[in-house]
Length: 319
Image (cartoon, rainbow, N blue to C red; front, side, top):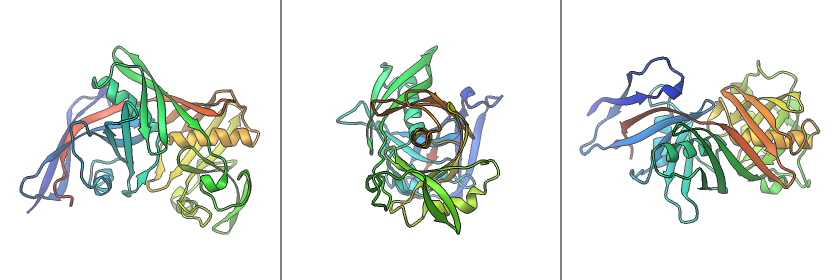
């Protein structure tokens, strides 16, 4: 029968809202006999928000479909996707991440920071240095707690990939740096970098008035990018300051993208805008990240992570 699912969630003071009620989502769904509620936590890294599920306690079937459902900001909980926190045989924890369209992502910098906060704050670890298995390798996290709660996380994101075929970009060049590319009849100079997922970086004099809903899909689905692409639109402030908007494959424009901020700093060093071994502040719509591309090759990202709410939702109707 058709009915309503009422999703109760305790709102965290970390969310920045000035009150502490029990908030309520009401969602029209179809009930099935034996309905089971899935416990979730909603978190964000400077506005890049995901639904997190502890798979030490929860069994999640059809995560692709569940991600589409919970990500819907009108008929679901509302998020940029779904993140599963899982046991790992090779690290302290494992992450799987799904975009709002249900596709599985390789990596997400903001989600890694939120997982660091989640596992520490909820007592799953007492270590302040942990390892996290992702689809793009193991990431190394340093947690910075204050009064028993993690406020910020530093992540060693590993080395940037610059060879086009490994990003992937369809090109026979050794690197894809400031190459002219026609997108919808307009030429853009594009630099491509992978941080475990592919990024195209574009430098513009003005980014605030860009119509990303119009041009974003054209970059994402361009024939140069066989796996689609995340696109960062960058305005350079100075050698230590970048301003960024991002169109993420599978999710559209988001408030922040950690791997995108890392890729943008690498690209900015390659294009002569920033310096290696120098911390760069990347201003995104949701807040700031501190990024350093070390001379030995690794990229270090530091930024906040915040809890929004805990709750539960019936997903048993999703088959």
